[in-house]
Amino acid sequence: MTKKISFKIAECECGGIKIKVTSKLRHVMNCHCSQCMKTHGNYSAYTACPESQITFINKKTLKWYKSSVFAKRGFCSNCGASIFYKVNKSKNICIAAGMFDNPTKLKTTANIFVKGKLDYYRLDSKLPKFNQNSR
Ligand SMILES: [Zn+2]
Image 1 (cartoon, rainbow, N blue to C red):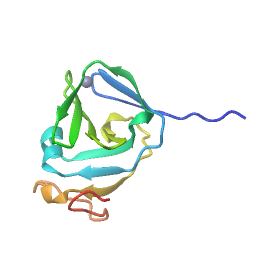
Image 2 (tube, rainbow, N blue to C red; image 1 turned 60 degrees about the vertical axis):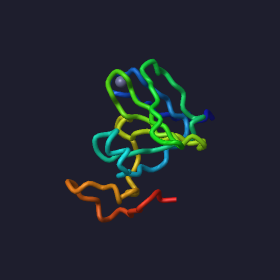
Image 3 (cartoon, rainbow, N blue to C red; image 1 turned 135 degrees about the horizontal axis):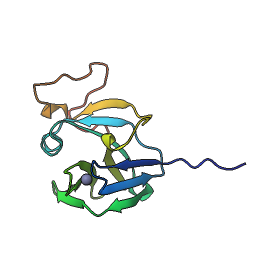
Image 4 (spheres, protein in one colour; image 1 turned 90 degrees about the vertical axis):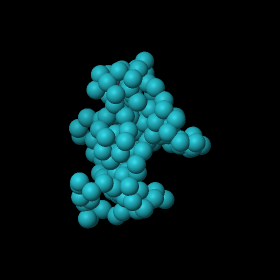
């Protein structure tokens, strides 16, 4: 019997950043903090996995922006896609869920940092919400 090897591919609009993820992805959380709002142009929808499970197929346009003393954000310097959020001390990396193609088999399970939510949209009332992170 052969072991089934599954992986997911994610890439930005221009393909300058393309990754292969070999681990299971965390469920998606929508983050409404002001930094996500400003860097994504809307709230963010992030999945996550251990950084060690990401292989870069292409990263020639990847740039990092130090968004705080404890975290950085990865984006494409060509097409402008906001792709990664990485807490410096964490082994995990957050990946914008929109980088993947269907079927993602992911589910949105929470809204976090809802204090930063702007007034032009509504939250799904069926999802739990947190003023900070869900952990
Ligand atoms: Zn790009």
